[in-house]
Image 1 (cartoon, helix red, strand yellow):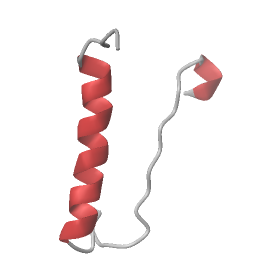
Image 2 (spheres, helix red, strand yellow; image 1 turned 60 degrees about the vertical axis):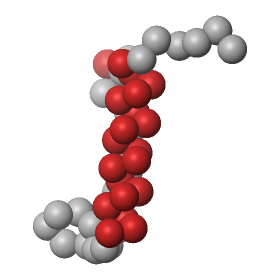
Image 3 (cartoon, rainbow, N blue to C red; image 1 turned 30 degrees about the horizontal axis):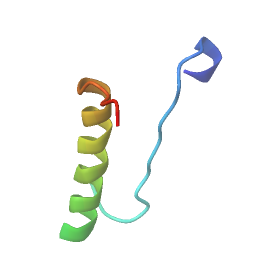
Length: 48
């Protein structure tokens, strides 16, 4: 992605199994990261 001029975002939870999380706290953290990313991409920026 970087060589093509696109930004690359990467997060790897090193714990957990096939679902990518070991417990509910890690799941909540990963979900929050996803929501923040999509909110920044889909919602218009405010002037403040």
